[in-house]
Length: 194
Image (cartoon, rainbow, N blue to C red; front, side):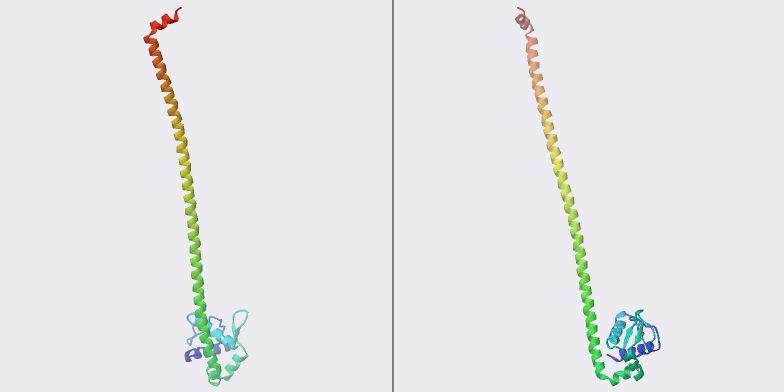
């Protein structure tokens, strides 16, 4: 640990010893204001908690453990470090590992967040794809219905044209027969008279 951090720890241990209500993320700077950024407060708490110097009660208030009281009775954190250099070295290694662990946890969180966002985007695209497929199916079904309607109307049109052609032929034939009968009306009457 560096000298500034040791001074912060010493200052906060004295505040806790005096009964100040300090929480996990509320460690103070030397100006008695809460430290900016939760990482530093959390790192201090984790270190002191791991060293069995402090703990927190069920309400989140931090209090000194037996070792913390011994440190205060020795004259504070800095005096304690001077007498226990080996503990300090372990603390530095532990802090470095915890900072590295926090970095890894942050990277892991960002990776998981990115994966979730990608999965959500993929799901949204899948839903959009299904909607487009449904619209395509409905459009194709509409085309089939229209084609069937066109076929039915074509059949009906051909039937009407066929019927009209038959009538035309029938009326033409009848016209020819009546024309022949009328033009030869005299012969027809003589033929019909016995």
